[in-house]
Amino acid sequence: MTTAERPRPARPHEPLPCPRPVPAGTRVVLGHRGAPSLAPENTLASIRRAARAGASWVEIDVDVIGDGTPIVIHDSALDRTTDRTGPYYALSRKDLEGIDAGSWFIAEDGSRPYTGEPLPTLGQALGAIAAEGLSVNVEMKPCEAGARACADLVDAVAERLDQLASCAPSSQVVVSSFKPLLLERMAWRRPATRLALLMEAGMPAGDWRSRAEMLGVEAVNPADEGLERALVEEIRALGYGVNVWTVNSPERAEELFSWGASGIFTDRVHELGRLVMEM
Image 1 (cartoon, rainbow, N blue to C red):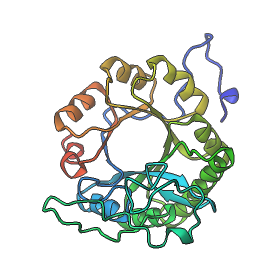
Image 2: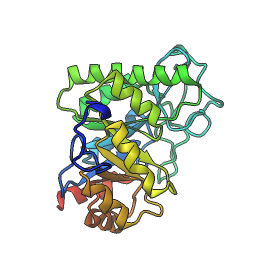
Image 3: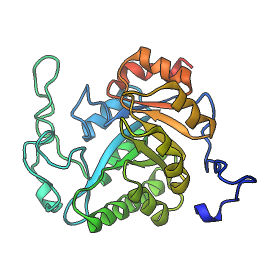
């Protein structure tokens, strides 16, 4: 249902209802980029380590390369998390072969146990997620290659999610982004998709409601930095989920849950995952 089709409130400018209210008391701990304190972020190894650590949800970042293949990576360039340099928007699927996305990761004992770990496509990552019985938050990155690339990104994600729904119907999926245009296209391309709006640290608190209502999201996911209880309570009062990124302190996580937050993204899912079981 589009915004225009939703019932008009009895009084002008009353909040529109959240399309899929998140129940009070919900507590979800999502492995941020898998389990990045145990394995290189956004890799198949990181997804599997998160599952082994007891995670039920993981978050992965997705962008698109030149031939329309969606890949799992956070940055807009290869430099930080692979053995290659530069942007990837002109690459093809074949160019991904041989990219090492694991040798940069140094374990606590000083070893590099993930040397040779591949840079995964979204299809490969969702295959691992399905095999591990996980649910997933797919974050569509802002995509710096222009309008056509943005459209390709959304369409490719939608196609892969259809495939996941066919092979692993029990896996829950939420798609998030900082970029409203990407969420808007996803709502058009795949109307049943559950959506979440990401908020940058320092984003004016009053900006969230109009964006959330226009996009029909079910959750608003703010940065932990500078987050105050009043905003969490305001968002939750209208039925939206609040999933906070990125939280690595058990004490802070408990505080956020006490405010009504419905979830947290963490780099330390092996430590904070227990908070779900301690409800």
